[in-house]
Length: 375
Image 1: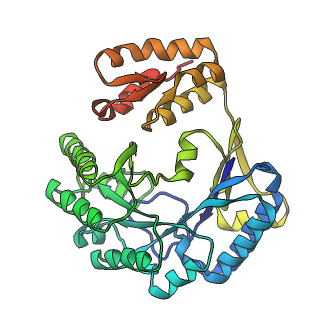
Image 2: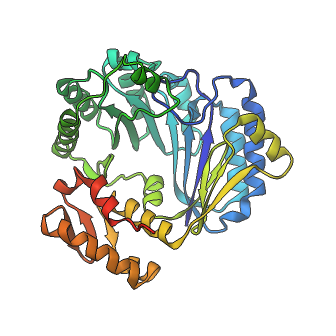
């Protein structure tokens, strides 16, 4: 089975921390949707197996109208074999989720909403250049619930400049009070070519200390566990077993097709990505040859990705699958380099799966790097 990722590149404004490909000029939305559907037709044979997840990411997918969504879904359901109970997710900004817009979404195949809240603190939202307030975010979640959406995820961000542990605790508590099913929590990263990175270079903002970052991560894990969330991936927490099926397929190295400018694809052997330019994307699709780059993965690269993605999750790295897929050389290398971390209690082997312990999660980057194959 496979997944489809659709990159919607439009945003009303640019957030200071975001380095995803996006455009604030929405005048070409119609042309983009036409090109997106045409690309789906051109590439329909790349995933002949049933599609179990569809994910609209961005950008801000909630900038599209009902007509746009209907056109896209008509193309997808006519070109691909979509499973009856496929998980179909829409990323949305709180300020787009009016009662009218949510009712529009209910009439479409969406059954999961991922809301980019980031913070419930108005000062933090202003710093991040988010368009919504704390109350608007809360109201958006409640409107989605009242409309019948029962699989709602929100994004939160921690490690912000001047963010305190107490503010972070309050953010988490407000999130838990909303009775949502999923939380993705990410530490702020100063990505090059973002406004935030420029502020950092000029000394106008200061990163939080490593000690504070660790305390915030610990608070995140403990608070969400106390409120019934399962920590199933380093940055992701689910209630009632409602994991993000789409993102889980990434971590389990399943195939996916990426449509739209800058979207990535994986066919089980190679990775490819579309050009990160709306104009060039539209022109290339119209010519019948979408502009793409492809990376042909070596056995070592595939092994490294298998380790990296597996260890990020509570299911860990299946050692038998590792041996079957990569052979004894890579299997033995992994076991040998994992030994000291098993002895120290940072890794554990359960049912022939290598899994990070709670303690190991805090130093996961270092553990993963030591298990990586270096040519």
